[in-house]
Length: 314
Ligand SMILES: Nc1nc2c(ncn2[C@@H]2O[C@H](COP(=O)(O)OP(=O)(O)O[C@H]3O[C@H](CO)[C@@H](O)[C@H](O)[C@@H]3O)[C@@H](O)[C@H]2O)c(=O)[nH]1
Image (tube, rainbow, N blue to C red; front, side):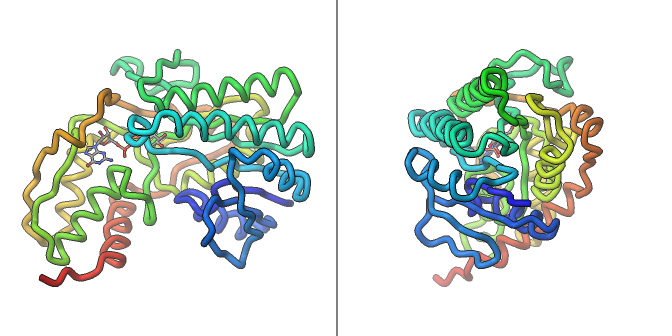
């Protein structure tokens, strides 16, 4: 069974490729980077906006399963780079769909969307079901909604084998500092290594549903094995945590005295206050259950940053 992961060198791609290898898949992965090497899988350099290259790779590999992870995934960054975000997330996905339609129509494709597509949610609408009307409030959320609309069209018009997932926040070792847990943990590790003991943070009042990335990649794999074509699935733990609580937990794992400073530059023009996943559909159709506990994942993320941050010498 051949699986192709776009964006294999990203945070989720690295975990997914390991998991698929363990499951016995022959793994192919695309990257935009010149430097990514992994001799356990077949790595192909590919830019999602290079249609010729995408067509060639899909035609050569003809994967049984495609996990489309490549994209611009940071909500904060999408406010700074809205055009890039839409180009990669909408046009890039469309280029992939066209290549599959032309050269490998039987491939099953998992398209990664986001809970950010829902936009602001009232407490009484939580946990959020897939049927909730979408009202995205960031360039990123709008791009992911548009991506999904294109996919629905390709299922209806061309009978393509596409399953769509809306992922809620996920965390783990190796995630970029654009995301809140990695941002906080990396700064705590820096402070432990001698930086000024001031932790600058953004909006601590929001609630998010955090899931360990290892649970997420297992869910993605189950969706392409057992999910229904043309359907949309939420994936997330089903539990909400306040961002201030995450900060408190991480700081309590450190022996250093740390002063918290609210930095207005870290606030976003619009920030969704509350997100909680109703995961009953993915559980029902695939048997997926989250396994990791958030406190254990936070410990591991902090340990990871401790291992990569170098001692500061004055
Ligand atoms: N990054 C960051 N966020 C902070 C900080 N302080 C507070 N926050 C708040 O922490 C929350 C989570 O921020 P992110 O980790 O950047 O995640 P997100 O905006 O919820 O987006 C993530 O989740 C989506 C699913 O809901 C994903 O689709 C998206 O790709 C991303 O992973 C936001 O309310 C953000 O304002 C900080 O110092 N850094």
